[in-house]
Image (cartoon, rainbow, N blue to C red; front, side, top):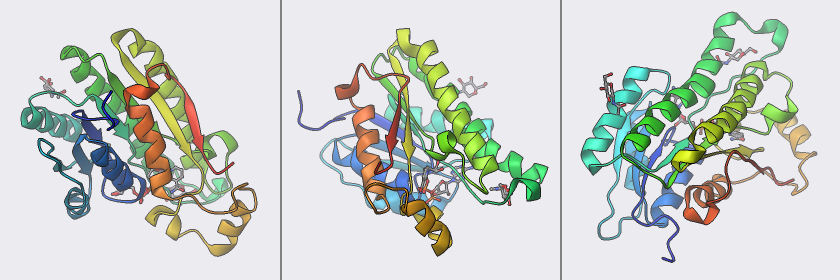
Length: 250
Ligand SMILES: NC(=O)c1ccc[n+]([C@@H]2O[C@H](COP(=O)([O-])OP(=O)(O)OC[C@H]3O[C@@H](n4cnc5c(N)ncnc54)[C@H](O)[C@@H]3O)[C@@H](O)[C@H]2O)c1
Ligand SMILES: *[C@@H]1O[C@H](CO)[C@@H](O)[C@H](O)[C@H]1NC(C)=O
Ligand SMILES: *[C@@H]1O[C@H](CO)[C@@H](O)[C@H](O)[C@H]1NC(C)=O
């Protein structure tokens, strides 16, 4: 077995321009994968690709893609397949948004926006990539969806976000059942409180309240989530399917 975890595999990562998505690209590249880094922010995703290691035979591409648009997902996946002459066997559904408020102050549009990116976006990418994998006869596929511990616990001010992430977990378990026989695994990772641009805006008092419940007594780093995702992407986790793996510091 090669010492690199995902040597020669092709990995499709959404929300790759920042935080956890960027760290996932870096870790998968370090472990030998060719990266298709996608984000709705073109500059950010190009910057990510500039940070990736490149050994002989390893190449990476940056694509501008909005996960809420089936058309955008289709076009990006199509050009990725043309570039590498085969579909990705690793898919990381990481794109996500928050913006919190209390339930009684949440309007319909705000609820819908979060569901569209976090839940529908995950569905669209999962559907398109699983279809491409099965058509290409890939039998070592691994799809990892980034949900959140908040989907299990709930959190004040995060009605839209927590509902979308619980949905991602249920979608993951269903995909695992539907694709298991094809050799395509699907798992979810549930981060706790991770230091990224997303959480930079959280007020200090809210951060302190959350941290008081974390056994490790500190925020997590994006790399600490990326290492778990990389394990789930690799064949080392070949019998892990339909699981929700918490990365919360306890
Ligand atoms: N940071 C945390 O504490 C934490 C905890 C639990 C779960 N998560 C989840 O981890 C994932 C990554 O979060 P992060 O903290 O790195 O956030 P981030 O804001 O740093 O990065 C998110 C990236 O997703 C991209 N994105 C947003 N909407 C998109 C769309 N419609 N199409 C394509 N790209 C889009 C953004 O441009 C950005 O580059 C999210 O799904 C988030 O919900 C984060
Ligand atoms: C994109 O859509 C076209 C038309 O529906 C379809 O033929 C093609 O297979 C799709 N590509 C991918 C990668 O799903
Ligand atoms: C989520 O809902 C809140 C209200 O609870 C709203 O203020 C926020 O804009 C919504 N998030 C997004 C990204 O639409």
